[in-house]
Length: 176
Image 1 (cartoon, rainbow, N blue to C red):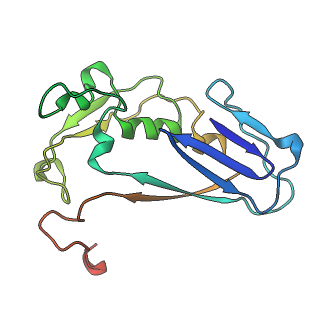
Image 2: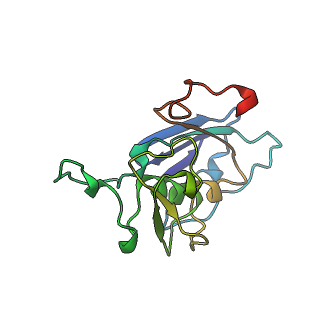
C-alpha cells in the first residue's frame, strides 16, 4: 500500500518499507491512498516544486529466486524455488509486479546459469535463474505507474557475493 499526504510518500514491497519526506508538503486535498483496487494516480504538483527523488534499493541475491513463502522438506530445499509450469512467482517477480504493475498473465522459464545461456558473473551457480517470459500482461497499478508524475525514481541493487566468481571482490572500472 502507498500513502501520499503532507509531503510523505511511503510504500512497502515484500515487507520492506520505504518513506520519503518531500521538501514541500502537498496540499491536504491531494492526499490519497492507492492500492490495487484504486490505481488512479494522484494529481501532479502544480506548485512548480521539483518532484522528490526516491531511491529504490533492491536485493538481487540468490534469496530472490525463492518463493516468498515455503517450507523446506528436503536437505536441498528445492521446494523454495518456483514452479514455472504452475506460474508460481519468486520474490524477484513479485517485486517486479509491485513496481511495474500486477501481472494478469505470468509465466517464467527456468534457466541454468551457464556461459552458454549468457551468464557471466554467476556462471555455474547451483540455483537456476527464473526468467520472466517476454511480454507479460500487467495492470497499471505498480508504484512506478502510480507515481510516475509525482516522484523521480532511482535504482540501486545489491548482492551478497563477489562481483565475479573466482575474481577479485571488485572489478576495475576499465573492465566493468
